[in-house]
Structure formats: structure tokens, C-alpha cells
Amino acid sequence: MASSAVPFAVDRSVPALVVKIGHYPLHHGGVGAIRSLGRLGVPMYAVTEDRWTPAALSRYLERAFVWPTTGSERPERLVEGLLRIGRAIGRPTVLLPTDEEAAVLIAEHADRLAGEGGFLFPRAEPELPRRLASKQGLHELCVKHGVPTPEAAFPDTYADVKAFAASARFPVVAKNREAFERRKKPAVGGTTRIEGPRELMELARRWGPRPGVVLQEYLPREDAEDWIVHGYFDSRSTPLAMFTGVKVRSWPPHAGMTACAYVVENEELARMAAQFVQRIGFSGIVDLDWRLDRRDGRYKLLDFNPRMGAQFRLFESAAGIDVVRAQHLDLTGRAVPGAGQRPDRRFTVENIDLPALLAYRRSGYITPHAPARASGTELAWAARDDMKPFFTMLARSLRPGAAQLYRLWRAK
Image (cartoon, rainbow, N blue to C red):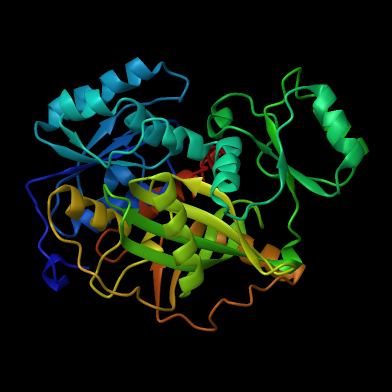
């Protein structure tokens, strides 16, 4: 959308910086943020792994700061790196984290980044993003505030796993307990379905004396639907932008990143999400994954990402607002125009939706709430006014190491 087409005024004197920690160069969310604000004339900067990532070649990027990180660095080193980038930009800059590590780092070092660095970002309790990114922390908050969530166990020892296996209802799924475990050698490779006690105990022998896993209730895909909620909440946890949609396909199937999704209005789910965010006092962009369990008719919260999701460009209001634009407007003292979300839009990630589509067709799974047609399709990579990221993605995907890059590309 061109800047002349939007019914609001943006402060073009305040740039934005896309912040990422770790190696996942094929990340379309960062490209989406660069385009969203760049089309409005906001100067855009980004942290990139190298000069040949798709984001680094966007026409809307003022400068790429090449800064390879792993996520295992000491926080002090990462903060110093951000401060160096801030000094190079030379003026107050809005921060846009694309992963949990960056969101947690910003929250836990907010005073220094805002004071010494002059960065602009929503302020929440310093420990809250880390707790939300943790499976155990999120589960505890859901229980405390009465938000439905799958039943879960958090074994601390091998004996705890053994006791769970003796009484659990199978199948169950195993996930890494902490979001940051993926930077280390994870206990499990993503969401793992476990059929029975024997299989669980065989896996548990590999987890060591302190299993870093959550064992969670399995919600059968034939009785479930995947919903997503994106929003932006101001300093009082008031929603200035709220959107709901259905995840039609993911890759890997049923357990991975969004490959295709549709906008679908869901007032009940939006209300539940807003109430939860207000109760915990969070401020900023949220990307929530919910699963409708048709067996009991309840929406259950699976994941709370305290940052923008990779598929955020699925959602836009009739006034041209997405969550990234809402944050920039709010932090620069501009009003965020209210308007309903544009209906029946579709979001497709070109390089993973084809294998996802084939896998879903083989399984015969169809999401009931997916519209038959879309009024418009937002592609993750291809854009008429900015094609270099698309071609760069294709080139990198075809390289021999593409499979490894996909495993590292884990943001939703």
C-alpha cells in the first residue's frame, strides 16, 4: 500500500529496526515489516546474518546491519551490539523483534536500551516476555487467569516421567519446555507425538537427568481447528489493533509454521485474547496460537509469542493498519485509527505451502472455517514493488544447505 493511500499520518523522522537473534535468514516476517513501514516512508533498518538474506535486499531497507549471532551469547554482549547499531542510526528508533530471544532481551534490558540507546519499544514487566515464551510459564498464567489450555505435565526427573507414563492418557505430545532450548541441543525436535508409555520411556532415556520437556494433552486434528490472534496493545494493555484468522496449513503438517491462513472474524476469540493480555498487563505486539477443541467447544491457548508473528501481514484493517504500523504510530505519539479487519484475506508462504498442500490433501484434512475464496492474497515473499527478496529466497532455498536452514527457520 502506498503512503498516499492510507488515511493516517506517520512520523517519518522516526526509523524502525528489525531485530533478530540467531541464524534463520529465510524469514518472511522481517521482510513484511520492512515493506509495511517502508511503503509509508519510514526509514527501515534490519539486523541480518549476511548481505544476501532476502531482507537485506529489500528496496525499502535503508541499511542492513550484518551481525551474525547464535542466541548463546551473553546478554551483555547482545545489548552492546544493539547499542552500537543505535549509535550508527543516530536517532530514536522503534525496535521490532522477530523472535522470543530478541523480545526477552529488550524487555530485560529495557532501561539501558531506552536510556543509553534511545530506542522506542512498548514497556511491560521485565520478566513477563520470558515467562510467556516458556511453555511452563504460559501454562501457569493460563491456569491462574482461567484461560483454557491443554493439560500438561512438566517432569523434572526421569522418575517424574515414569510416574506420568503410568497414569497418562495417550497419545500425548512432547515439546521443549523453554523457547530458548532450540538454541541448544533440544530434547525433542519440535512437537513430537508419543503413542504410549513404552515409547515415552524410550525417549526419556535420551533426555538426561533433568528433562527439558512439557508433556501435553494431544488434541486430535480431526476434532480441532487452529486459530491465530494478532494484536497490538498500548501501555495500558488496551488493544489498538486486533485480528483473528484460521491457520489452514502449516509445515511440517499440523505442527509447524504457518503455510497458509485466512482472515476469519471471531469476536469470542478476540475478546478472550484481549482479556488475557489485559489481566497479565502485557504491552506490545502479540501473536497467539489457539486450538478449538470441538470435543468440548473450547478455544485452548497453545502459544503466546510476545512479538510480531511471521504471518502478521495476513491482517490489515480497513484503515490500512497492521500490528507493526500500530506500534510505530503509538510509540511516536500518533493516533491509531480504528476500523474492522479486512475480511477473507489469505496469506501464503510460497516456498512451503506447496508441500503442505500436498500433505494435507493426502491426509484428507480440511479446516471447516476456511473461506472457499479469498478477496485478496498476501504473499510472504513476492511483491510487485519489491521482488528481490523473492528471488533471493528462491536462490537460497535451492542451495544444498536449504534443508538445514528450514530447520533453523522457526519463527511463526
